[in-house]
Image (cartoon, rainbow, N blue to C red):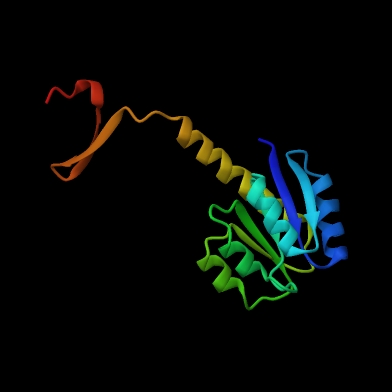
Length: 150
């Protein structure tokens, strides 16, 4: 599966590191990088992406505020130098939390997690549910909808 992503970080060197790591993963394509979170927000309102690498502490608009302004956000991987925002990040249902300096192995693991999650979602959407699950006699039974008469 090909993952489209963008990188938002106010540090140019951090973006370069993520770009370098991304270039080693064939399934990952960077659509654009941003140092200004406001520009990124406008881009995200017009363009659908699968994955967002997002710094937390940025001028004008931090990563948490940017995330709150997205009506249906993509998968989020926070990339930050701060350990202390992890709990707040996971309360917002982010996929992963990478602490700088980020190792290549840890980056690849996070991207792999995103890929697996999106494949799982794609499989569920394509799967037609032509059965129901019924609990009876202390067990759960799968019943085909075609077998139900009334």
